Length: 407
Image 1 (cartoon, helix red, strand yellow):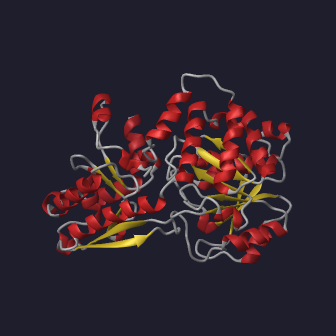
Image 2 (cartoon, rainbow, N blue to C red):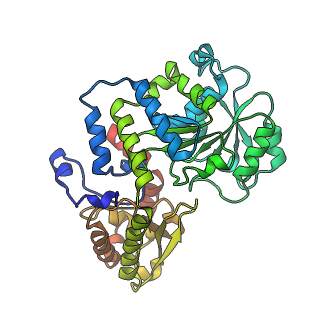
Image 3 (cartoon, rainbow, N blue to C red):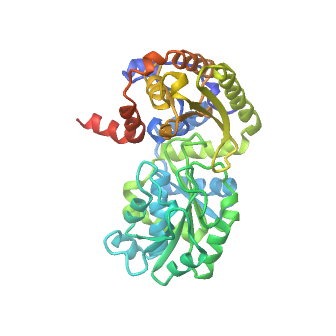
């Protein structure tokens, strides 16, 4: 079935290395390691490690696979999707001029602005605008946070604009933004290429078909490869982005083992039994929903992914007056369970948390069910956690973890 359920629950690695156990029902989160590679991908990654290889030859092979996967003319691999944004922007600024590539980011030249709708200026662990700035680009904001208009985009695309960036993500505003097809049409009429950040998206072909010139994906999220970013699209822009390895891209490079593993992950995706995977995810969602539907103050509702990925999550609404604790307090309690259950809690201030089944290992659906019942029926323990602190932890968890480690 080519998914994580090939692995049984096994804590031996965590225990022997002294790392904390965890069960991930949050999703494909970078802070949790992205996803779990299958044995096939792990074997391909390991096989490359004790050998020498020509990196450019491996990248050429990766380009062939990327083309088959996405329908792009060409592609390359880099350290992450965030790195892919920076390199794609840099390539749009410099073209194939190596002297200009070496001058980045301090001397990008006059044509270095990147147009982005305000509603797409998200934070995915770092700011989209910072990925642009690392290339020497300047962010040119289009519209307001809930509404961008066609003429506003057109006005931004003058002779100083090197690219237009479009973000497809649950992090961005969905309403009031210019649709990709229209966005691309306006940009192309002014000779400006369109770069799409689609790090966590299943749609590996549709975005290019809708007019994107470059699309960037994560190799270590739904694809289940080693940490990597995939840059796919027009050959001239791909080549210009790859050229950046002589400059700012040097610090974003990817090694032989990750290239080998990412190629295996992409080939695996082409063969994946997507219907069988979806059926297993639906089984877990049904199991969880049935287990907690009758609990006081708890209302579980299945919801589709906001960007039309073919998956659903269980959104668990919590009425503190009836449940005895808030969604934030329960999320904190799950994180202190044994083993810790990491729920999708970035919107707990709205009174709910979510459960994502896409990273389950063998037997974990049942383990999660039991943990849900245990924690949600022990409101007294959950209520001991300070709600404001729990909300702050959900909002600043990643940054706070860094700060705690550095202390």
